[in-house]
Image (cartoon, rainbow, N blue to C red; front, side, top):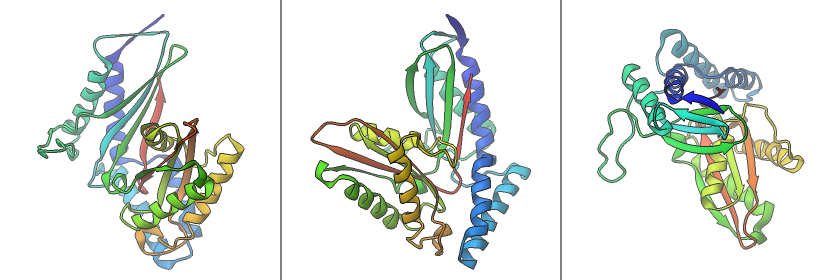
Length: 279
């Protein structure tokens, strides 16, 4: 049995939050740079160039990539052969968020849903726990802006609608979002399970590296097809038109009840601020 102090998790959450606020991951930067070369619209190419310049300025000058420094989403996988010490892991995660947003002077955007009173430290984070085999901890952190989060949708399709219905719902969601979620986008799709399971899968899909196609042959083909169809919508970078509306589409699925077909779409903007580490 491995003993693990939750304060290490707190420190790592803080470190990741501060890093993500100022720096996009290499895979995303590479995708944006490639898109700048392949975008057919002159305006679109100029916009992509500005996004890359913005990312460079943010990293070199320590300025947040976006004024919306996001709500923190944490997915933590804990090996069942680990004994956590030093307190409750949820408290440790929230303390890491708190320290990052207060000490890093990041915008605090978390409020009570009814009174709209700000919690003043960007907590609580949205935390998803998963118990797995082994003695490792896998920590995934996402800084989720709500310009894109507000454009996500969940729909309970009928089984008879099948793949055509799934595809139509996803494309309608992207089209109705237009330029609001600050494209080019990364799109997470969850199919199956229950309403909440589909939504959870769609969000978790965003943690996959750009280019990490599904190992399932059918889902791989669906990801590629959806990416092509989304990029034919002519929404383009930041909604100015063009052939690069999305950088990537990730699809996850889970068995569901024979009477249902839940589908969830979670959209992320061009600044996909996420990182996964193993501890």
